[in-house]
Image: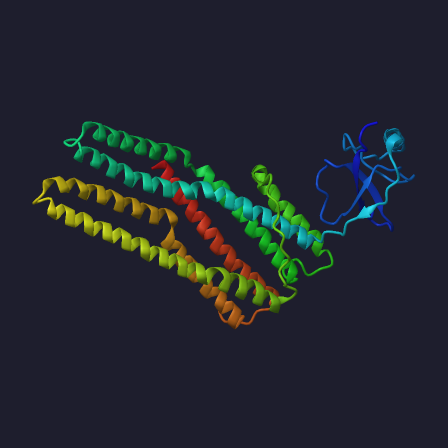
Length: 385
């Protein structure tokens, strides 16, 4: 006898009726909707009047002829089945389901960002190394020809690697990352609107609306679904938000102001200042070497190498958008702080709790859209150039 086939039942209430109907699917079937109850069992008989799916084809049984045919199929498979108790799992609320989907998209965006982000740093290092190796090769030619040739070959390989990395860096990579990040942030916004009962989530059908909106957002990035394969949602609880006051405390103050925008603004400022200091230092060293070259001409070539290194640092600073992000994070933090403390519109008029939540989410959304647009347009210019 073969192994007992594993089945799942999706139990849901028919529209306009009491009670439930069971739909049996195979274990390898698709994920059920967030509002379903999942019941796992080993294959058992199907009571009369129930509807179910073919475990092989997944086709729903709708007519009496089909039901009899499918029932015979299942009964034929019961030859080696022993009775087991049903084990039911709790309903997954729409908000928890959406929160899991947001986690998956957030991790996917991080995975897609790693490629372009890492390539910029590698290109900067290889560019500076190639200039230094080429210069060193020309300087040691009088000392030993093999060493000079080895350094020249290393310089050539470094420049070839830079060219190859530039070829791999394309606009589509950045577009995939920003789109994944966009849907992640959009789902997060919908979850917080749902939890605070704001916007369109203040009615009795709020769970249905949330599920429909998340599915719509994911449908728009259907071509990116393959990048979510193997990504599991992090084990985390829903934010402790249940009204406008808790939203302002958890989402705005703790998460966005104290946990993200204010520390990020300080970090961008520190990195920008540190790299600018390196850039200025290299420029001064290059000027000093150029001056010394008047006495020792062989030193003059090193001024060019240092200048190249300084240019690579400047290009890296531009590619990382440190200055732009510093300004954007500071501006967003200031606006969110005003909304949190004053709870008024931009013109000073009082606004309702639902309007306040929508305004906060709009500020966050505008900042996200701004940096994504900046990445897209500058990356496009860099690749084309």
